Structures are given as structure tokens and as C-alpha cells.
Length: 543
Image (cartoon, rainbow, N blue to C red; front, top):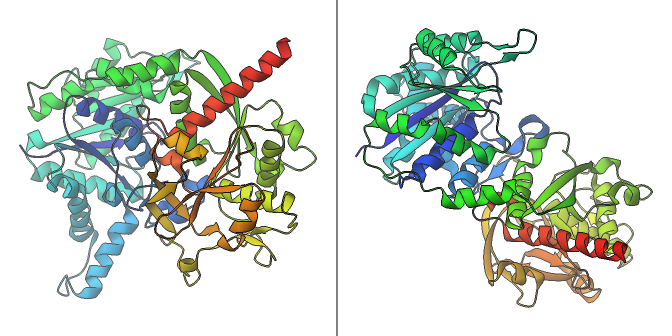
């Protein structure tokens, strides 16, 4: 059987949820026993989002093999429960970089290099690459941006060519669009969808299925109208109505028969119905929590929800595992001071200090760590959050008042966090950090070992600075323990305070591996500790 290709485009507006629709369809097909993967083609000229400000593009999702990718790959992994790779995220920058490098090598034999055919040929090669590996039955490709965007045109042209080159039963085009509700007129309007599809068709791409994002139910009459004016078969216009959780969307798409329409087009018959028992069990817990906890997320980019997308989703997964609703309260670390930290974080059942880069907001994070340490509030630090708990401990317990990371204070006399040795000669910023999955060996009597239940774990990294081993002996003698280290380099990966009810900082990014069906162990333990603290305070107040 040939690999089948699904292309998902979008129109009218960005942020309609192409990634969620792609991931939901992939989940349904995977649940039928098919081998499915998803890839994202982004139209921006950056090689990858690694150098982008989180306010610009949301979080940078890191894969096991060290690719810095679009946050939609996080959705793909969370829905499918399988790892993506460098091949799953392609940008215009990568395409042009490859073509220009070939031109410099003389690969085009002196011919004029043009968007068609050279750029589009490279796009097509990448679009088909995963399918040619033999590892997948179906490859879903999400085209970033919206139809009509200047920068997206080469990707749309590549899809047009593939529609012509591949057999009809091997390729299907799905277009996601908006059907807005005008409150003044009290009706849904299909004209934006009609114009979006017309623009796509003018580019030569003919969608087989139209998915309408809507706040209200689409009537049969509206569906027929869209099908008629957009030149798709009756029954191939489906709705994606707003859902209480993104994890409800696969069930909504199943109810709309999206996977059945795709399989009919591919002439793939006789497959079993989707097995969603584990998914439904997760949703049942998610929708029916038995308790609530309030958790503080102290970070630098809290104004944009997508900047900490994987952390927020990890709390959703961990909350369901604990049958608990986790209310995440975001606090801008720049606004936290020694004078207001107690009032700011009062009432929080747990405190997470988030990752980040640069000097801005550092002191507020340190104050949040101190508050958690001194008041026995469950604490969880990730990457920079772990580094700041080391800095706070060195300042307040060891008495090194100017202790700092060299990232924030290059002239500190106590650099308890220092630039990694192999980073000191690096001047290029993009793709040069410590990236991807590395092993970590856990101390058997540690909180980390209790959480994971095994000695060797593997987690993903994204950092340039590390724990300075010159201070390890002093810090451990004062009560903070390094309980996880890289088995090859000795890099300190995890620190804990055994005297504290729950205090753990990790250099890696555990949020990147959490999924609904396999929630990340530290998040699960952290939420459990927050629940226990809340219950204990309630017992004391009732006496």
C-alpha cells in the first residue's frame, strides 16, 4: 500500500486550530491501528523558532533529536503519544537554505534558480520524505499561515503540483476555515469561508473536505450552501465547534465522521473502529475533578499563554491523573519583590518557577523560590527555575550575597551557575544550545527516584548555562542535594531539599514529554503534593 498524504490548510484567520484538527484526525486514524505522523510547514524565513522571542511565536518545542520546533509539534506528540523529529518541522528558511547551498555547490549546473521549480521541488521532497521512509501509513502535513499569505504561496503551489503528480486516492486536501457568528444579525455567515476556498482554488488546490470552525451548530442548510458554493461533495462540510477542552476535539471529529471521510477517499476499507478507551478514561477524569488546587506559575512571558504551552498542558494531564482541577495563576516575575512576594503568592498550594533566558525578571524568580523554601510550599523549578533555586540557596543559606548566574551577572564573585564549557567559544546563537534528550542517573534515596521509580531516565534539554561543580560540595554540605546527574559528563540535572516537604529543581524540560495517557511523573507528584498541602491546611483550619 502506498503512503497516503493529508494536507491541512487554513483560511480567513490564524489560530483557528489547524494543529488541533490535524492532531485529532491523526489520533482517530492511529486509534484504528494505522501508523501516522504529522509534520508542520511554517512560512517564516527563520531556520527554526529557536531564536524567536516567546512573545513572537509562543514556546519553542524541542524534540528528542534536538530540533527546536513550532509549538504545534507539542500538540502532535501529546495527541499521538509518539516522538517527532527534525524532519517533522520545515520552515521557508530551511527550504531556501538548502536550495542556496546547492546552488553554491553547483548542483543546478549553472541554471537560473527559481521558486518554480527549485523551491517547490525542495518543498515537495520534504513533504514526501517521511512517507518514503516506510515507517508510516499516513503522513499529515499542516501548512502554516493562511491561504492568501504571500509567504505561504510556494507551499500551496507544491500541494497543487502533488495533487497532479500523485494518484487521487493517495492525497486528500482539508481546508479549515471560519464561519463567524454576527451577534447583531443573530446568524452565522458563510461568505468568509466561500472567499477563502475560492482563493485556494484560484491557486489550483481543490479541497476535498472543508472543516468549519464555529461557535454555533451549523444547520444542514448552511452545510449544503457551503458545499454548493465551494464545490465539494455534500457531506464533506463538517463543523469544528468550540469545545471545553482541546482533548475533546478528536471525539467531536469522530462524531462528524472526519476519519471515515478520509478513509473512504483513500479506499482504505475494513479497518476497526477507533479504540479510544484510554483517551475517554482520561477525559472522564479531566471533566469530573474531585478537588482543586491553586498553583503559581512564575515566569517572564506570562502575558502570552502559548509561551508556556507545554507546562500548562502538563498540568492538565497531571490534574486528571490526580482527579484534581489545577488552577494555574500566572505571575510576572518582574513584578515580584521581597516586599510583596508573601502577599502575591499567598494562598498558592504550589509554586512553579518557569524556564526563560536573560536577566529580566530574575530577582522576582529568586524571591518566589525563597518564599516557597521558607514557607514549605511545594516547589518545582524548571531549567532557569532550577538555576534560580541554586542561586537563592547560595545567597540566603551559604551567605554569598552576590551569588548569581553569569548570564545575569557576568562579574559575580560566586557564579554558582556558569556557562557550559563547550558554549564558551560559540558565537552563533541558532541551534547551538545543549538540545535534545540526554540520560540522567538518579540517587536511589532521592525524591526524584521515588517519583520516577527507576535509576536512569531520559529528558529533553535546552540551555547554555549549568550548575557550577566548584560549589557542589559547599551546597550539599548546607543541605541542598544534587540527586540527578548526567552519567557521562557529571552535569547536575536535579537538585532537591530533603528537609522540605516537596522541593525539586530540574535542568531539563520535563513538560515536553507529558501526554494525556502518560502524564509526566514530576508534574503528577507536584500536583499531588499541592493537594496534600491544601488538605492539611484545611484540616488545621477546621480544628
